[in-house]
Image 1 (cartoon, rainbow, N blue to C red):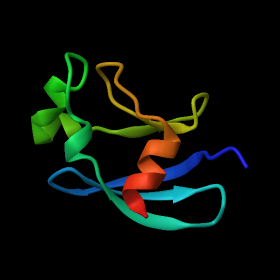
Image 2: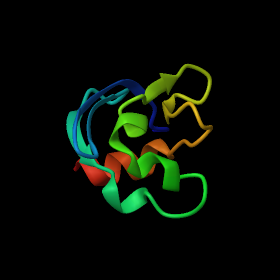
Image 3: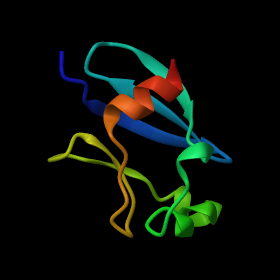
Length: 78
């Protein structure tokens, strides 16, 4: 099964509640993912909290163009 994120909601710090197309729902702490030039701005929690689900990519993304593979988010959630 190819994983897709259906819904994502910012909780606090770098935690996101995510729902996947396999029916599972969990909380992923994404702090460890914030490395490298594209992710550096997301260390600002007000920027991190602007995440959304990209309908084409079917994963979470941010206004600066950063996104994470749904498989990585799944791993962090479970």
